[in-house]
Length: 194
Image (spheres, rainbow, N blue to C red):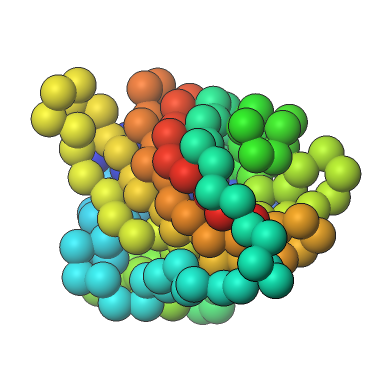
């Protein structure tokens, strides 16, 4: 179960939905296999640090303000065989939440896995979209199991965006408290500068 919690990260969501998409109506054994594969790949990527984008120090004409950031949300997870090309598995997380910076938001996180090697292909990241359409981009910076609760956590950095988040920087740690192969809930804390 702890390994499955890793896949929720993200919290955060993904690319094209193909007719072969694996969802909660799929055989539970297949879902568990995809969830474990995804969790292992996510932890491996978080631990090796390759392809992780770090937040850059960007200037917003000296008007940037750092604010505490809190967020809660939930969403669904899809697994898309061949979603990133033949022989791949795409992970897609689509969620909604409420954040002190974005307000009511939607988020999408995606990444691709080579099932033969268990390696993530490319980076892990996503976008949160505020109600007014402003976007905040984020990338995975770390993941693990919280020793106090036994739940999965994921750390993200902000890498800019659009509108008021064009030069946004900062970070957030998400703690996943409910997770199945296809559903998750999270709470998060961090800070954001924009």
